[in-house]
Amino acid sequence: MLTVQDLRLRYRTEQGEVEAVRGLSLNVTHGEFYTLLGPSGCGKTTTLRCIAGLETPDAGLIQIDQTVVYSSASRTLVPPHRRNTGMVFQSYAIWPHMSVYENVAFPLQHGARKYARAAVRDKVMHALELVQLAELAERPAPMLSGGQQQRVALARAVASEPSLLLLDEPLSNLDARLREDMRHEIKALVQRLAITTIYVTHDQLEALSMSDRLALINEGRIVQEGAPRDVYLHPADAFAANFLGRTNLLDAQVVGPDLVETRWGRLTCSLPGTLALGAQVTVGFRPESAELADTGDGLVGTVVSTTFVGEAQEYQVDLGGQTVRVKAAPFRTRAEGERVVLRIPAERCHVV
Ligand SMILES: Nc1ncnc2c1ncn2[C@@H]1O[C@H](COP(=O)(O)OP(=O)(O)OP(=O)(O)O)[C@@H](O)[C@H]1O
Ligand SMILES: [Mg+2]
Image (cartoon, rainbow, N blue to C red; front, side):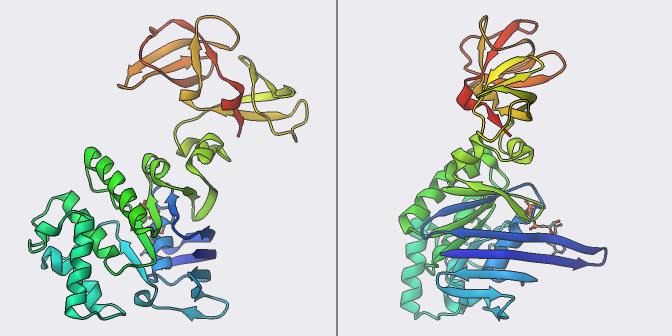
C-alpha cells in the first residue's frame, strides 16, 4: 500500500545543513495502523511531509498504492493534491476565519477533484457525523474546545476518502484525559473506514496502544520495527530499550545455556543460540517484569525508595553499586531499607 525506500532529506539553513531523514525505508500494508515513534527532532514530521508531497526529498522512492509519487531515480514528483492522502498537522491548522463546515469542505472544493455542491454537502456532513460534530457545523471554528478542533481537523482529513491517512501528533495539544478518549476515537474511526494510517507520535503509550506495527526512529533512521508487543519486549538496542519504557540493563557473562552471571548473582535468561560460553553481554528486563520476594533465588538488593503511583508501587532497588527499577502490584508494600530478592522469569530477561 505504501512503500518508502531509502528516503533522504537535508534541510539547508544559514547555519549549515541538517540531515533530517537519513535513508529511511518502510512498507505498510493495506488497512494497517503504522506508527512512527521517536524523540523530538528525529525526522518524523519530515518523513510524513515527504509522503504527503509537502516536502521534496533529496533521494529515495515513495509509492502509494500502485503509483510511484516520488522517485529520485526516475525523476518522478507527483504534487500533493494528486496523492490521495489526508493529513492532520502537528498544530492542527484549523482555518480560524471559517466555520466548522467550511473548514471540512475547503479541500473538497479546492482539491484535485472538484465535487458538485450537493456531493460536498454529503461528504462534509458524513465526515462531521463520524467525529460527532454534525450539530456544530455552522459554528465558527475558533469557538470550539481543543478536542473539538482536533475532530474538525480529523474530519477534514477523511472527508475526501483518501487512501492514506497521515496523522502528525494529532493529540499533542490535548490534556491527558481527552488524549485517552481521542486515542480510542481515532482508532475506532480508522477501523470503521478501513483506511491505511501513518501515525506520528513521541508518546510511547499512544504508539503501543494504537498501532498494528510501529517503527522506532532515531536520527532520521528506523532503528527497530515490529508489533508493539515485540518491540517493547525485545528491544534491539539500548536506545530502543530506554525509549520504549524504562529497562534495567545489567552487564553479564554467559555461563551456560540460558544462564548468565552478573556481579550480583546468576540469572536465567532467554539467550540467542549463537552466544558462546564466556561471552560478555548486556541483559535487560523491564521494571514490571521483576517480582519481589523475601527469600529464594534471585538478585538480592535493598529498597532505596518507593513511590505509590495508583495502579502500582514503584521501587528503586540497590543491588550494590547499581540501582534498578521495579514496578510491583500495590497490595503489599516494602519499606525503604528493606532487603528484597528480585526474581526475573527467564522469558522476561533478554540480551540487548
Ligand atoms: N524547515 C526546516 N529547516 C531546517 N531544519 C528543519 C526544518 N524542519 C525541521 N528541521 C530539522 O530537521 C530535523 C527533523 O525535524 P522534524 O520536524 O522532522 O522532527 P520531528 O521528529 O517531527 O520532531 P518533533 O517530535 O519535535 O515534532 C530536526 O533536526 C529539525 O530541527
Ligand atoms: Mg514533528
